[in-house]
Image 1 (cartoon, chains in turn green, orange):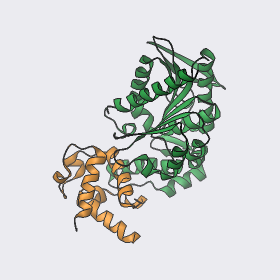
Image 2 (cartoon, one colour):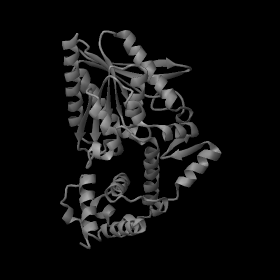
Image 3 (tube, chains in turn brown, green):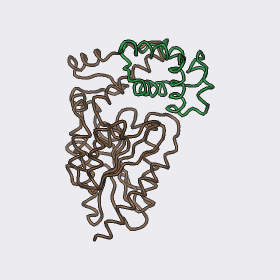
Length: 276
Length: 86
């Protein structure tokens, strides 16, 4: 396997892109979409391990940082969902231009999964893999706020940040420090509107959703989405009982979700070859 | 059962936080952080888990260590929230 790194120009900025090239013939291209906030850091190792595993199986995997994140240019507060959708599109365009003969799909985790689905609809991706996607953007912000409140409680005995603080600061100053990330008003508004349900019904390709939860099934957590999965024959859900590795500092063995993903890719690849 | 909430909480703590001990070994009045190694990341999971399990909402003013320090404290907190919503 080869590893390439480059900077991809987009508007007046650049994206840091890492490409995992397989040694064998390429059977597909996969663009990874990272989570944001602290979840990006905690999940980094798993995303790299997944890229290595899939490239061994013959997939060209592209990992990249959105603008304002990681090693790409810009500041977090200057970008929002539309910018990051353009970033994904730029990476998809680049990989498709180098190899048009194989299917191209997206794999995303948490916020990255929801973004991957939107991009898959907008850019006609052949398939999309969603690892524990953010279903409701508003609820997601509230959970991020709770992360700040728990940290404050552990440090000072009680939390000082409230939802009212956050909303009023967003309104008056146009930004809010959310767990060390400068959340802009634009990103806040975009996240509040973000809904997986809106895009899931619009996707016509193959879709795998891996539900990663210690206790409850995806269906019981999100009954409103179950009907869509029942209707669409090319949509699949796999349940994995695992700790939320995107929230944890220590190592979590994620080989099960990596193998589930690879097996599903193999099945849809075989189906594609049979129909060609 | 008067201690049903305590037992549900212990089960939730073990399953949600992947602790390698049986739920019944968690003592009601032992500190969750000092005795069972629960950190801020785990506590966030616990908060989300409690909201799902008991159908309650943890408000901004509830984030006090006295509400989360032990199973007994958590159970008292859950009971108050359930009474409020009844």
